[in-house]
Image 1 (tube, rainbow, N blue to C red):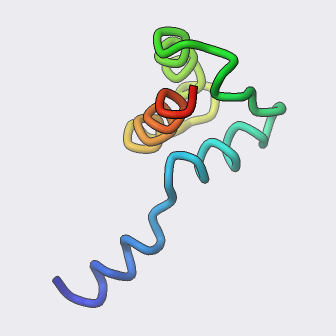
Image 2 (image 1 turned 60 degrees about the vertical axis):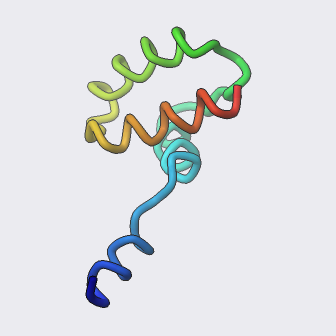
Length: 69
């Protein structure tokens, strides 16, 4: 792996960062504890379309929310 790979990994945002930045653009982000895993899956599908998120970003956000609820 070269320096480009290291730099790219540093630039990638965590699910928590993406959740905070993305969800707060349009509304107050709910607490991860507000919903269960099944609810977060449904919400993630809906918000992926509304917020124009990539599948990878949604997966990171969903993973964070499920780990924190």
